[in-house]
Image 1 (cartoon, rainbow, N blue to C red):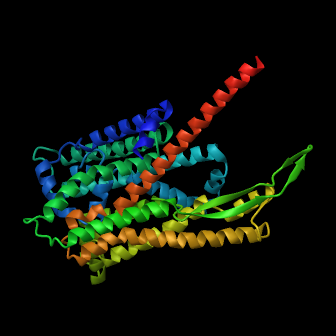
Image 2: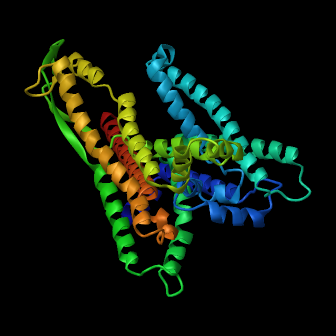
Image 3: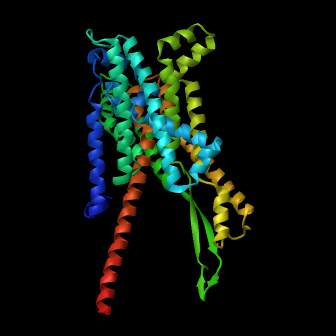
Length: 448
């Protein structure tokens, strides 16, 4: 592996992309430590120490690489952009105009991306106002700071930070390595690992108060999740395809065999990110005192559900698992259409051995995809909920090491695997380009 990394740095194009990505990470980490003006840092640290934990707020803080805890200009991270992308994907399934734009190639995607950016601005403004209201209502402002001025600077700063991260992610996708937004999320998660590991070691020590028997259990969960994610990310079902021979202007085309790989987890880290992003919306609303007051005056079951969602209880786990499973199928339905694939195969003379072209081929591909999505969705649900289950079984003793398993590992390892595959693709492309140039030089010499 290290030999491959060193070889990647010897290729100018790949080295340039890697260095650009690392530079973008440095800019992101620098912004994490730029606080929003007007907040009392000492009271803020005390407040978040009590509020953050194994629930969704702790996960949001891990998502943003500690920016949420510091209430920096990147406190919202790319979560508004993810929410806007989810809403836009849902609207494409019900609005014919947006669905038609999706089919228009690059031009249509540019229009959809523009709408997604507009939606990101709106959601960022709403979430920034909600978070700023919570900070002001908890009395976390400096004594001489005007609340009106704080609201203005906070909302503008948080919204601008989100839009900058969205722009930075697009630049990484275009000029760097990997998918930009996913890479920013992975950078935030990896940046939070060193202090989490240090806290875990301290917790398992003599003065930590955690039973040492949980240390090997946590390590086993971590290793199992890493291995499982790698296996699922690289696993695929190969569907054999044969092409009939065709004679065009005296030349014979086709006749070869190939295959179409169907990934076990086609959505990668997207379902888990979508589910976590969706759950930040009710969590943010529940932090508003007016909403809490309304719930407290309502039926008792609303109070139970509110406390359960905020504490990461069993109802929260059920909702989290259902959302992950839903987005596993939903994302696949957006990016993959069995009927279109079947039509393209028939158009180019391809067929699956033993399956008739047309609708039977589409039904066969859909059955394969459904089975794979079931396996992939269940796997995502298990490894995403596993840390919560271990946390509850341990009576909260492993809260300090919560982020070392499950969802964070899934995202970090999944994005890392995709990034390594993209680096390998750039290296292979460079290798073939060098062969073509060498062959052209030799052929040119022979012709001369």
